[in-house]
Image 1 (spheres, protein in one colour):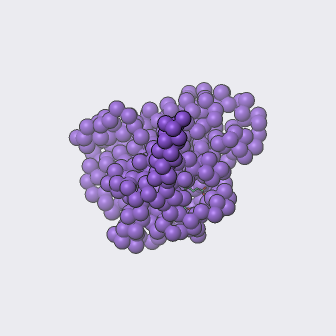
Image 2 (cartoon, protein in one colour; image 1 turned 30 degrees about the vertical axis):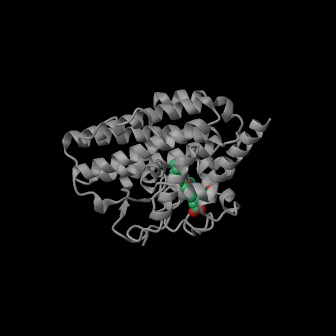
Image 3 (spheres, protein in one colour; image 1 turned 90 degrees about the horizontal axis):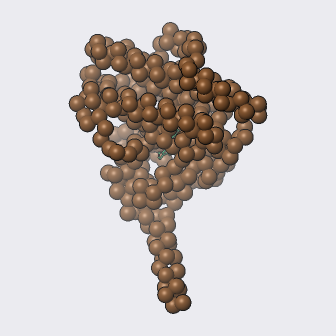
Amino acid sequence: MSILTPQAVPATPLVAPVRRSFLSGLGKFTLSATAIALLAGQERLALVGSAEAKTPNNDVAILNAALGAEQEAIAAYQVGANSGLLQKPVLALAVQFQGHHKEHAAALAATVKKLGGTPVEAKKTYTFPVEKLKTQADVLGFAAELEKGAVSAYLGAVPILDDRDLAKVAASILGDEAMHWAVLRNALGQNPVPTAFLS
Amino acid sequence: MKHLAALVAAVAATFTAGAGICRAADGDPVHGAQIYQRCLACHSLEHNRSGPRHCGLFGRSAASLPDFDYSRAMKASGFTWDEATLDRFLENPLKTVPGTKMAYAGVKKPQERADLIAYLKKATLDPEVCK
């Protein structure tokens, strides 16, 4: 039931290998306060056991889909950080945002486990449009697009999560990623908050 | 009573006109490209991500890319992707294909779906992107 089974990626310059050191670091996170709070609320469900749909919509599958997107975002920020295109204050920001995604991923993976599921694993390689990333603005624009996509994905998850506590956690992650999106747009000289509603 | 019958007929006509291909044909692909941004957390046209690539979608059987790990539910859906099946699936993926891995609430507004499908119809055949 792995959404992120490593897949053969065509041998084009699009392939951005994820550095090993970075991958091996993934296991080391201690859970944030949010994650612990979130897990504490899940004892009831965790006792239920199996990963298979205990709820009509299978919250485990929804969390795993979000986890897959978080893992990709972590890898994308790594590509940005390694690109040499980001200058000092922006680089620090990117690293900070990547840190948030790592916290989200750790919390999601821990919750999937607690619910009796198997967290999807990060892919060994992700395919990013690296040939289009030539300037700092390109990298920021790419990151902004991913953050916007993530906001939409959480927006699509909140209404279908059966467990209200999990929906709340998804909404809190959504808020964080919407802030990333706004800050990135601002750094690009774009209207940071272009609409009253997100979709 | 006559009024009621007329109303029922009018409503029925609206629904018929709104179904499937008719509505999709009215879709605005430019607006659809904006709607497609909602899919970009998991999909791209040309690459598999956490969701399968969309190039060549129209006319393809559901779950038919050999290099993507689909859910059993999607494999068993029996869909072939066209305006009508996409319209049904995208409105409520988990209801249309229970057990799908596409954990997404769906695109609820019919016009937005029509626009999105109009965009997909063009973009998934774009020779620049879909080589």
